[in-house]
Image (cartoon, rainbow, N blue to C red; front, side, top):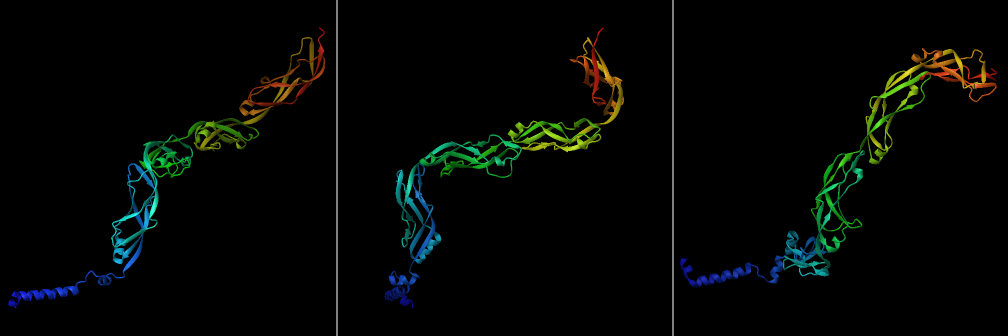
Length: 409
């Protein structure tokens, strides 16, 4: 065997045999063998939502009209189609590097796809708008709903930090900017100063949101909240009529002022609150706890109730008899005679607080008739009475009969 291996002809013959064997074992690049090794032949797939890239001068230009994604139809050998579908290792783009300002048509292009595959995008072209990019600084205004403020509180002037933002976009879009606002969103009703982060909104005059870039996108909005309060007196209001024989001597509150809350315009018009005491139900000294009554629009009052101490006097009756009737304002040339009552005196029925009525007598009253302007003849003249305060009286006669004559002396 070793001798055969050393024979050069033997080696040459073996090489030829191996070459022939490899020719039949290893597939060649011919069409017949290729068809056998590619199952199913060519196929087609639609790849949806493939991102679109745009190449242009992003620092100085703004391009609109380019879709975010497109659907790409690929066609070719199944293994290549399936690989592209799984990996999506290709790119769809538009090249606008040499674009000028204005509208122009551009073509979708594909890169990174196997040369064995054909890609189709419909539509194959789009019209884009190319505009100058500008950056302008705007002042941000805070915006919030007053319904977020709790009753009895009011909001001061809100502040924004930072109060200016830079807005970048197409020149014609930036020129349409009318409002730059930071709106505070709803939540719990506010009764104290609040600071919250708010998104900056850029709007045109019709309140349409504009497609621009805002830096920063959010700002801090602070709304000062204060309580609307006012201190006012508490007034006592009597309701009803005291019972017969009862006099209300005094009523006193344990708290004479109250603190009220409400809208500023309501507080401006409100000067007092009240407590109503029904005196028709009081027959003796008493202390009552009563609600403090507020007017419409006042949302809160402190205190809500107060104590009222009521002091009363019980009335007694007494007859004061024989109070003489005096004559006043009789001219010197006349004389007057009281004809009736014959005793020239009046009895008084006096009623009032017992401590004051019991000590009264005729000397405490002045009963008289006023003859000013009367001349000779008989007259009926009304009786007039002056007496001490805090009591009431009723004479048993309302008038007297007198005769006036001329003095002949």
